[in-house]
Image 1 (cartoon, one colour):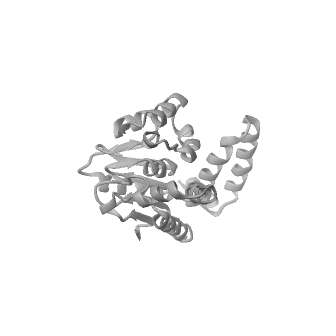
Image 2 (cartoon, helix red, strand yellow; image 1 turned 90 degrees about the vertical axis):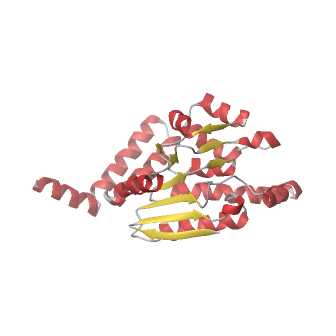
Image 3 (cartoon, helix red, strand yellow; image 1 turned 180 degrees about the vertical axis):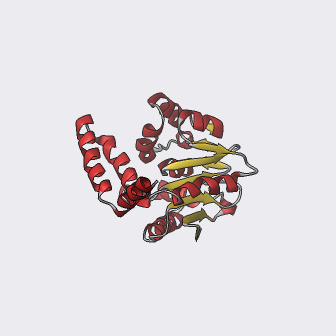
Length: 249
């Protein structure tokens, strides 16, 4: 259900259910997790990009998954919710950047998957949305991430009205990082990702970890944590070599 490939130190995870608009089910979520673990274990990988085959990034849960929710017990629904939670946590804990490359629609759980990534690159005609309220559902787990990406009022608007928004507006409110032309989207994404192959992977990993770690800390504690990471960074081989190269100029 996914296509996994590594090229130029970038691991690609392509959701490969185009006939279902790459809708999420248990098997697809499990394969995404496996692909992320495989990429994280590869010391040559500097970035991971998640994309969708066909016209859309991901349309959310498929019909079978929704039927399962409707018929499941409280315990089964808790286990199912936990599976998606584990995916979101995994994305944050992987040391390399995880990037969503969004073409077409990223809706419901698909929008949640994109939002959970470290960075979001969108084609100019991409569409984002959390339509869960239309069927009495709540985008509950991704809300913790969405609220950190956009303002409180923007988050409230997105999750309670259930409307789709375009890529330009998604970038304006902080849901997307970059918007690229449809015609050059793949090459623009490749060029964007190339930057991560040119910087220190150790520094990026430490920075990613620190960024998310300080989120729940008080100001002074965050500064002290930053000081600790600063010391760790100074002792890494990448930093030692980088300073040496700089001093030789």
